[in-house]
Length: 166
Image (cartoon, rainbow, N blue to C red; front, side, top):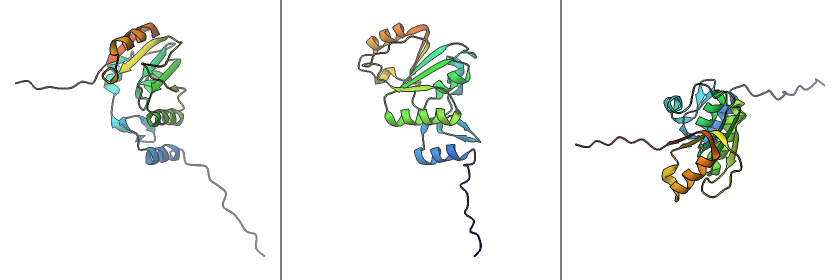
């Protein structure tokens, strides 16, 4: 009787993990490069990052409030931040951000955190508050809270719109 040979499980090709993630989750809003020519769908926010963040965040801590998929959190890590915390209230976006960081090997910590209700016991060198203010019930109270969380720089940026007035 001939010996049977069984196919051994093969390790996934290196691009398999991001391919599966993109196919299953289809994240969109912020374009984040995942390697192997793969990226999430959405706007390229690189120019915003260059305007908002210094070239080096070496030794700095960053809090990214309303991080969505985590583009600015990942960018802060790429620029050398030693600690990056991304916060998001939407569970789907939070899970996608965590998965993206895992795929990239980025040690970004993601938390489900509501900036208006939940306590934050830490302070950060940089606090990013991008396109969040218009969602809040108590924007001025929230900004005061964020000032207390910030050691060096609080960045608030709202949606830019172009209005033609004739």
